[in-house]
Image 1 (cartoon, helix red, strand yellow):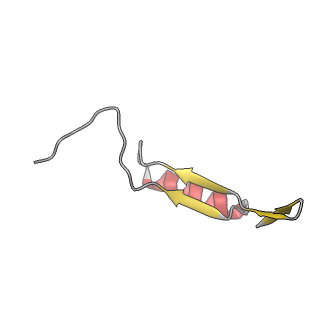
Image 2 (cartoon, rainbow, N blue to C red):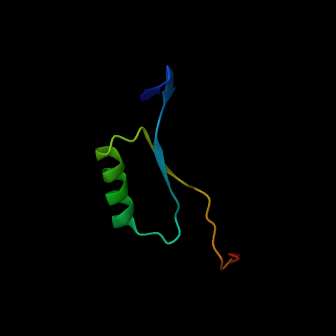
Image 3 (cartoon, rainbow, N blue to C red):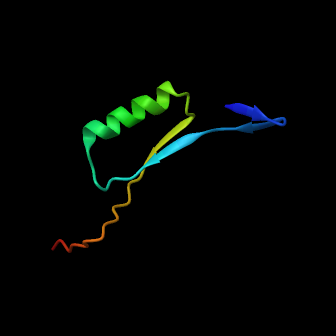
Length: 55
């Protein structure tokens, strides 16, 4: 956490699953950690421009 004008401030990154590339996801998470990000989020909501229906 950082402090700006006496207030605690955290920085993070959010990663979506489209397009999903596991190697890039891992690289981005490592990069965020190396940069000192406080949070790395991975969305669990699938959003796409090509909806599908599974039955």
